[in-house]
Every structure is written in structure tokens, then in C-alpha cells.
Image (tube, rainbow, N blue to C red):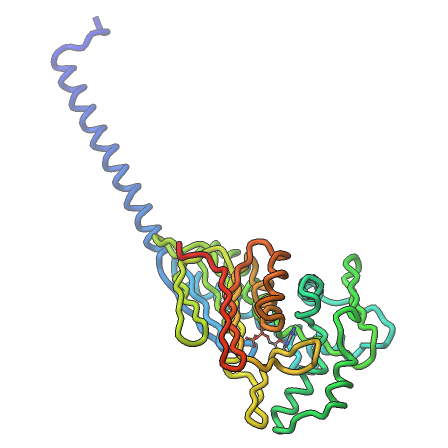
Length: 348
Ligand code: ADP
Ligand code: MG
């Protein structure tokens, strides 16, 4: 009967079984090696650096090969360059300066999605920080830049006049029409307090479009992180209090920003004034303060680092409640007194 195997058949069947097992093993090994090669290919680490928006920008990510890495990095930097053309208050022709030039004209001005979006985030943060963050400080910031260049301290009248042209409630937004209205002549928008965080977020979006998953975008101290580098628990980020204390954390899928008087300040009669201005007085912060904020979003982290620097520890404690998922490390030095407030989670 054909339904039973002869001994010979059985032996053959046994052989056939063995060789198919061997084949399966080879196939599995092949699969593993293909997978391994792939994941190895994805583990190439790429670093790109470029001076942008007046600061050093650094991009680190993992990609399968050089051509994807190069084109992705180029496009990410091109996106930032495009944003700079829109948002820079140093360029006469920038969209933001053109809008400022129409302040007080009674006109609602149509703006690009980028400019609208950044102003919308800015206004939201201004409300939640009681104006500690204010993107309408342009006239005051310009006055201080001029004073720093000339080494002449502005007069009380100059400060008062510049202050009269500021105030975030004088900036109106129309979400439907994506329009902006600056109610008073002489107003000037300045998004320097959150522009780098916004740029970092946008650059990361470009890289993600290329299928890149593990990214660290450092836009002059405003950092956006995505998935951890392959085989690790996170990006090792060292945060400093500005002097003696350091903290290293393994972070991923989060943003962080540091604000502090590193090199941008004005010194007059032996007193240092930070380039961060207190919107209540129109004067650069007088005490040394270093603020690091960790937030789910880079634009928010950047804005909060500026706002909490202005607000100081006590007021910031209350404000932080408005920003779920955000953590702060704020160090204030006033007359040799050091105050330290740290809500950063312990290293994971
Ligand atoms: P960095 O220079 O590291 O980007 P910030 O993020 O704190 O520091 O931004 C400082 C810039 O923000 C200033 O140069 C100015 O253009 C603007 N600015 C200053 N004070 C304020 C403020 N209170 N709110 C919003 N923007 C501010
Ligand atoms: Mg900032």
C-alpha cells in the first residue's frame, strides 16, 4: 500500500526532514543577518553643525546611510533658514519686520502659517505667565541693543517711551483668517525668546519625514529629543546650574531649553544687565539667573526658560501649574544669596 512508508522511504523522509530543518535554520540565520545588517545600518551616527540664528546649531541623528543623512540634514537646515527669513528681527525684509512696520495702521495683516503659529504660542504663554513672556518687547529690546553697541545707558524718558509701545494685549490675532493686528504705531514684534525652540521643533519634523527616529536637535541651547539612540535608554544630557552643580539625565521624546547670561548682556557702571528684559520695568534682569526647562514641546520649553527667568522662583512656582509635563531648574543669585529651585526628575 502506498499509504505506508517502506523503511527506505522512512529513511529518505528522515533525510528530507533534516534537510528542510537545515534550510529553515539557514533561512532564519539569513533573516537575522539581514535584520542585523539593517539595524546596524540604522545605527550610523551623524553629526552636523552650523551657525544659525546667531547661535551654534548642532544636529545628531541615526540614519541608514550617508545619502539619506546628508539630504535630511540639508533640508532640516534649509527649513531653519526659511524660518529665519520670516522671523528674524535683524533683517529689514523679514515678514515679522514688515508686519511691525504696519503697526498702528488699523489694518489686519495676513501672515504666513509659521508666523501665525509662533505668535499664537507666544500669546498663550504671555497669558499664562501674566506677561513675563512678551513678544511685543521689540522697541525695548532694540533700545537696549543700541545702548549696548554705543555703551550709553538709555535715559528714563527713552525707556518710558519704548515701554509705551509694548504690551502683549496690544497684539491681536485672528485664528480663522490667520491675521495679525498691532493696535499702536511704533510696535515691534520680537520672538527671540522662543524662536530657536520653534526652529528646533520644525527641523525635527523635517528629519522625521525621512524616516529618521533618533534625533537630537540643539538649537543654541534649545534642544528637542526624539527616540533614544539605538540600544540606549536615552540621550545623555548634562544640565548645569551655571557654576558648580551638574546633573546628567538620559532623556528622550522631550525638549529642554536653558536661558542665562552666557555672553549676551550689557555691562554699565560695573552692573550687568541681561538681554532678558523684565516687561514690568523695561530693564534687563539685574540678578544672575540660570533657568533650564524641560517640556513636551521645544517652543514652550524655550519660552518658559525666558519667562521663568523674569518671574523668579516664587512666581514661577505658581505659573508652572499651567504647564503640565514641564519641569524647571532655576538658580537665582541676588546680592551673593543663591536660591535654587529644582523640580527635575531624578535620572532614569
Ligand atoms: P537666548 O538668547 O538664549 O535665546 P532667551 O530664549 O531667553 O535667550 O531669549 C532672549 C531674547 O528674547 C532676547 O534677546 C529678546 O529678543 C527676547 N526677550 C527678552 N526679554 C523677553 C521677555 N521678557 N519675553 C519675551 N522675549 C524676551
Ligand atoms: Mg527663551
